[in-house]
Image (cartoon, rainbow, N blue to C red):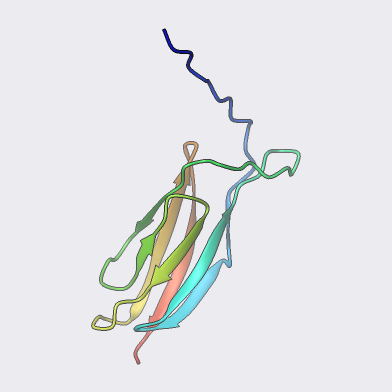
Length: 101
């Protein structure tokens, strides 16, 4: 029988997305990062992070780690939405404002 590894995740401090907000024009892209730290302030790495967009017509996000690339589709509406990062039963939001071209 093969051995299975068990990873114990420490208690995490509140998650934080950096930057906290983005303002982009249609067709632009930017990078954001989820800061994951334990209660002592030490970074916790290699967690799977799921990024969800509240409005696919405004922004798309791609990644499965703490860093994401935000892409604003060229044809689309302007407005404000959120990208939500989820990991270890916690979440944090990044507010994204899309301006018309």
